[in-house]
Length: 95
Length: 171
Image 1 (cartoon, helix red, strand yellow):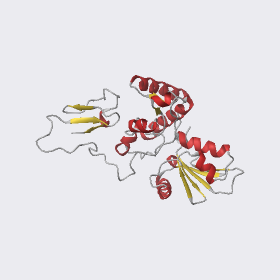
Image 2 (cartoon, one colour):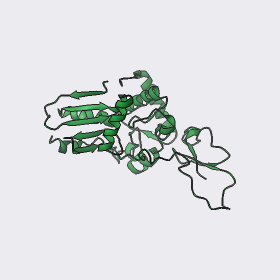
Image 3 (cartoon, chains in turn cyan, red):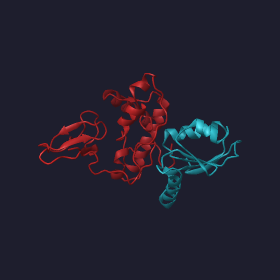
Image 4 (cartoon, helix red, strand yellow):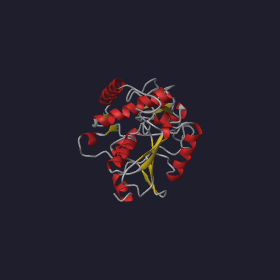
C-alpha cells in the first residue's frame, strides 16, 4: 500500500483529499464508498508516513479537524467531513 | 496488508478467534461482521509489529507506549462507548443490543481527549478530605472500572484481564 496516491474517477469536479489510516476499518469503508461512486480523489495514509512529512501532514489534518481523527475528508479545500459519513459525502460531492 | 509490515492471513484469523473467545468469556462481544473484525485484527497485528503494542487500528499511534497506553486495545474508552453508542470507536467490540440487532453500528465521535488534554497521572483519583483516607490505596482498572483496595494493583484485572499497567490510583 502506498502512503500517498490518487484515484481516478468520473466525478472529478470537486477536489477531494482523504486523510486516512491504512489499518482503520472506517477509513477503508470510506475509500471503498468513494471508489464505488467513481469519485476522483487524492489519499494520504498518515500512519505510513515518517518523520517530518508525517508531522507536517498531522498539522494539516489538525487544521481541518482539531481532533485529528480519521478518516478526515476535505472537499473543495473547504468542507470537512470527519468519519465515514455516506450521506455527508453524497451531499458534498453532488453524487 | 499495509505498506511497511505484513502479517499472514493465518495469524490474523488466529488472533481474531482468540479475541472472540476472550470477549465472550468476559462478557463482551466482537462485531458480528467477521470480515470487518478480520480487517481490524489485521490492523492490530500490524500496529503490534510497527510499534510493539496493539494500538487501536483507527487511531494514529505515536510509537511511544506511555503516551498511547489509553489506546492500546481494548482502549480506556471502550466500555463508555459501548454503553453510549453500542460499539467502541473502531467497532471491533459491540454491545448486546447490536448483537441482537436492536441497534446498528455507526461511526461514533472520538471520546479520547485531544493531545494536551490527556492526563495520565492518576486521572481517576477522587479528592479526599483529610481524616477520610482509606487504610489502603484503591486502584481502578481503566478498561472496565474494577476497583480493589490493596497495596499495589493486581498483575491482571480479574474482571477484564487488562494488564497491571492499565490500573490507576483511584483513592
